[in-house]
Every structure is written in C-alpha cells, then in structure tokens.
Image (cartoon, rainbow, N blue to C red; front, side, top):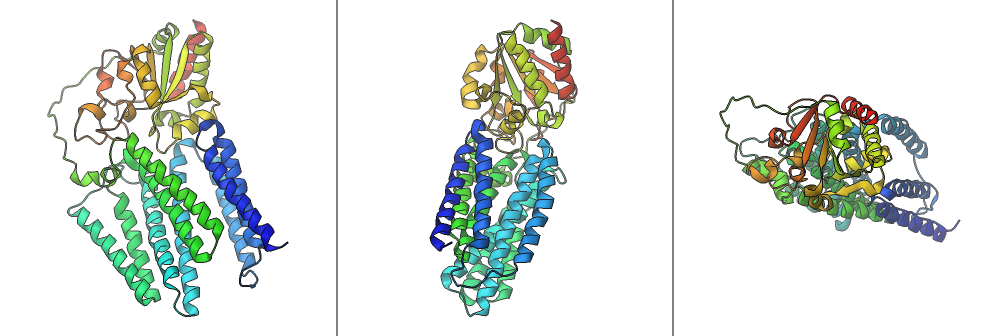
Length: 464
C-alpha cells in the first residue's frame, strides 16, 4: 500500500475528529460523536503502525508499544465502565493530566534523540520547550483539580502571603530556563524547566475555589490539546497537529463560555482569590427556621401544577436518582403537566455533567432547557423542584458582593410560585456559602436522600 493511501486514511481520521466535535456539541448527537471520535483515534493508531516512515527506517520497540497499549486498555476500560457518575469529573481531570504528561515525556525523549545527532533546530527546540512546559503544567494542575474534586484536599481557594508574586516568579523562572534550553541546549536545563513547570501547574490551580474547578478542567484540557499539537510538529505528525489543534481550540472556546457562565473574567476566575475581600461574620447566633414538608405534601403540590421545572445538581448524581426523577417527570407529563429541566452551564462538577447524567436515564432531549431559555419562564412556573443543586440557584450571586459566586448568572427559581428543595441537610453547596432561598416562605424542604425522597413522591403521585 503506497503512502498516498495512508495520507488519505489520515485525512479520514482528521475528518472523524471534526465530526466528533460537531456531534459532541448537542446532547442528542453526543453519543454518536463520541463513537466517531473513537473510530478516528483507532484509525490513526493503525496508521502509525503500518504507514511507511519518511526516513525509510523500520519501527522500533513494537512489542513495547503493544504492551503499553494493552496495559492502557486493561486499566482504562474497567475504570471507565465502573466509574460512578459523581466521579466522572475526577476521571476527566486524570485523563487530561495523563495526556499532557505523556506529550511532555514524548517531546523530552525526542529532544534527547535529536541531541545525540547534534543540536536540534531552533524550531524543534521551541516546539519541544513549549510542549514540555505546557504539558507539565497541565499534568500537575490536573492532579490538583482531581484532589479538589475528590475532596482529598480543601475545595476552597488556597492562598498564601505574596502568592501572586511566587506564582509570577515561578513562571518567570520557567520561561527563563526555556530561553536557556533554546540558546544552549543540554539535558540539565530541560529537566530544571520541567520541574519548574510542574511547580507552576500546582501554584496555578491552588487559588481556584471549588465552584470554579470546572472552568480550570476545561482550560487544562485546552493546554493538553496545544501540547499534542506542538509534539506533532516535533514528531512531524500531521494527525497529532490536527487533533491537538482541535482539542486546543474547542477547549479554549469552552473555557470562555464557562467563564461567561460564571459571570467573571478568566483572570478573575484563576486569581480572584488573591484580591477577594474576606466576608465579615454576621455575629448572629440566631437559629433560623425553615419550612419542611413530606413526600405527600410535595406530591399534592406537583399534582395540581400546570408547569414544573426540575433543576438537577450534583446531589442528583450522588444519589443516582436520575432514573427516578425521569419516572417522576413521566408521571407528571401523563397527567398533562408541562415539565422541563432547567440546566445551568456549570451545574455539577464539569461542563455538561447534568446533560450526561440525564441522558443516561433517557430523558427526552427536548425537555432539557438551557439557563437563558428557562429563566424567562419561571414567573409562569407553578413549582420548581431543585434536586441536589444549591449554588446555581443561590440569590447570593446577585445580592452578596465578595462571596465566591457573586456575579455568576443563576437560575431565577425564586420567581416561581413554589420552590421545593430536596436536600440531605442544611449544609451549604460546593462554594461553601448559605442559600437564603432556603428560608423563603415559598420554599419547602424535603430532607433525605434524593433517590429515596423522589421514590416516595412518585408513589404518592401514583396514589392520587
């Protein structure tokens, strides 16, 4: 098979990546897009094994490569199949970090190989330095996002005296060492540069609070794409350049959209903790009362509603209640109730988390309504059922300057006729702040595990 055929197959693989991104843009076609992308990646891998080398040399270490692929399959497939939906963001963070780290290692090995034949070209040195810096930053930063999401460390911003200056100094040291590598070469400067980049990745993510972690995941994903593209230049692989550029571009666009959904600039998201003013304690020790109800109370309220909006959040994923909430929606729809799901862009702990969760329960795509579309309908909504969400409906985002979510656009559920909160306890959401909506006279709290509570409501509705 001549090289032209392989070039055409490479073009087909690149087209698959583009079609995959197109499919992933909407929940209805996301599954198909994912399969097309996987097919393109498989084709690209096959091409690498069988396409003739430009140098005319044969492939080396084929058995080691196959062993590495087999190991990856043995680890990756069970992990992906057994992972809980609540842990999906952590898995994405780890996969993203591994991708960045792998690109940095590949670029380092290629640099060492080129150095044996003399000093590499300036263009190759720049591409290698870029890949190592961004790849190492993506790897260590992704590890910190994993630790935050897994709550193995505090989810609050981690700041320390002169933190901004330490981060700036680390970045300056990394860039200075990069210049040293480009000018003089050598293995030691490259290793020092990689170590500083790893440190910068840690310092870069530490000041980010829990509510902003999804934005950082998206940004680091864009970083990984750029490292893959740069490593493609070093390895003279058009496929890597195309795939990395697509990931980098789409990740950058998603990051900007996520930052806009949080109502702040990207710089403010990443470094706002250094300039945020501490909130003053109210000094009040008053125990405030809330209105709680039973499953029967909630069922009666839902039964006589004409329009119901369900707002899913991370608590829905924790309780694995997506199938039960879909059953509840089906019962209400059969009774002639207009049902919709209000989806906030940053609900859950990663972009699209709620869409994936509800798609797993086969919720009709036309019932998923984005924040901009659902907000104007709340004044005409009889009941809003908030299941495991908190920060995305918290009025503090509009009323409390200085709080972690201030300025973030929210779902305006307070404008509905009635609000029902399904909560385990009165603990605050991921941002760690209290929700005044819980004390609103129109709000009813149904305490308990979301799945158990919804099951009781479903049974009560069936009995009506």
